[in-house]
Image (cartoon, rainbow, N blue to C red; front, side, top):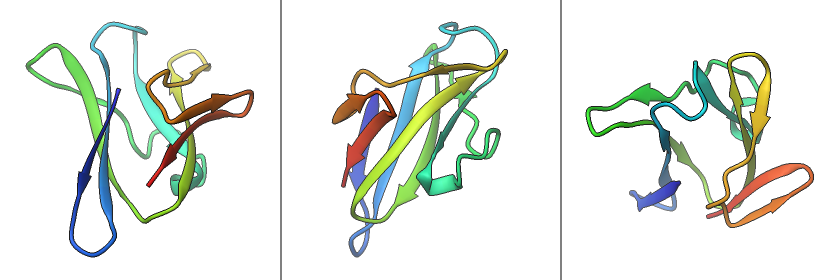
Amino acid sequence: MLRRTRLFGQKTRVTFTLPLDEPLGVVSVVGDFNDWRPGRHELLRRRNGTRTVSIILPPGVHRFRYLATGGLWFDDETADHVDHLGSLVHL
């Protein structure tokens, strides 16, 4: 799930949220905003039974995917658009 919070200027904080146990293991959000580098934005466990990470992004269209332990790539069904290359968020 994606949550957007408008910040100062034209920036937006995007919070990426997944269930705590689906999929199992470590999950990172990777995309054009972090040069597709795994581990840079790892989702962290929260007390409410989820795991999240927030990233401040400029206006535009950003492509991303999730990468889980074992090389499992998957998309976010709540993204603005999903195609064969991954998920898109429009800011």
